[in-house]
Amino acid sequence: MQTASALNQPLKVLIYIVCYNAQNHIGDVLNRVPVQYRRDPNIRVIISDDCSIDDTIEAASKALRELKYTNYEIFKTKVNQGYGGNQKIGYNYACRNNFDYVILLHGDGQYAPEELTSFFNLFKGNYDVILGSRMLIKKNALKGKMPVIRFVSNIILTKIQNLLAQTNLSEFHSGYRAYSIKFLKEANFELNSNGFDFDTDILLQAKFLQKSIKEFPISTFYGDEKSNVFLIKYGLDIFMTTLKFKMQKMGIGCSLKFKGSKYLMYKDKFDLKGSTHYYLLKLIEDFKPKKILEIGCGPGYLAERLEAKGVWLTGIDIFTPVNNNYNEFFCENIEQFDWNKLGQESFDMVCLMDILEHLKEPERLLLSLKNNPKFENAVFIISVPNVAFFSVRLGLLFGRFNYADRGIMDIDHKRLFTYSSFQRMLKECGFNIKRTIPVSPPFRLLNQGFISEIFSGLFNLLNKILPGVFSFQIVKIAESIPTSTILINKSSPK
Image (cartoon, rainbow, N blue to C red; front, side, top):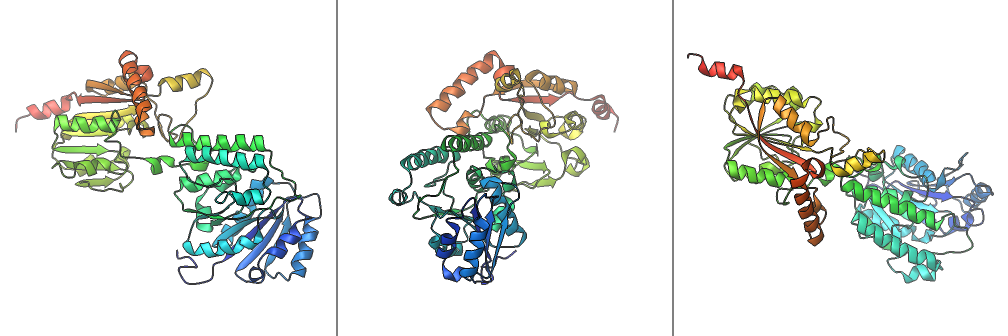
């Protein structure tokens, strides 16, 4: 769908003014809005009074009439929605009425309405999020009489959040901002906080969705308006929200605000020493197979690695890989796959990396592979996460069993395996286990440095002692035990 700018048409913009007990300030705010935005049919002004106990609505109505605004609406919530809840109303309105951008303006005059022009100028850059920042030029904040405690806490909290979220913003906490409607329709903003930490939630969603964020410097003004932000609670709330975001990227926790991070964060791990894919590549080099079947292909990183090595690679996955360099690929559900599609030629290796835990009946797949003469002489490389990893055990000790967006406790997992139950399943399905590799947690994925090497070495040592407790994942190298059917077919006279 083409945007208004792509068609050289005027942008449709909503200026959404949130108010709470703003009777003494809303008139001045409306008076300072540039005249060109008061009567433009493509610009709508909405004043949302969040159940104030003063006469905000009356003051706003009077000012709008006197200043000759023509495209506006005023409403008052019946129940206080909170700062974040009030924003949700405006963003839903903007999405449903096909605006291109929505600008958030505060009715207490803390942010200069004159700066609206800067937002409109930046819309030409098609940014997803635009922030009016008080901290790009820090002296502006102090000139505007920002309290020193807020000034210092803003700097400290933003540094912490930038570190955790891997962003580079001058501040997370400006309430003067604009969003593209395209971004809002993708973000799960309805799941965000109804409090002041809503602003952090939605910026993290923008980061999660890899959206463009643009900052520009603004001045600010602190007058006699009463702030409703409690600094200690606010600081704790945004720290916890940002920490949860960081943990979810690490595969710990599963907030619906950032659902689907595994698809965005999946990386090529073949060069990551000690990872399952690192071991897979080493095993391929050792066994030197000529024909490989990969079940569960992800983005297609294995196909990229083997493209120039003269190995025939067949892939099966429910999704088409981004890097589809396979000699043969089937976009199908493996649990319903017709094995006759593979032809009659035999395979030397079958790779089942982190796929069995996603199946309703992994035993059925294993039996299908074992009983198929195409894989009679194939080596099987199979990996699963270890649900008995010590951190999961520790959580259970305290009554916690938290699913995550990826990792051991991936919310999409249908089956859970321990070190022993994985081995038992393979044996019961008729596989002879030749070797087991206990895999340590992916410390190197989080940090390529001295500390990660120490922890990796420690867990490698612990895995030799208690692999069932300290292995993060388990890799099995196995071969199928010939079935009676295959043996009879081999011995039958031609």
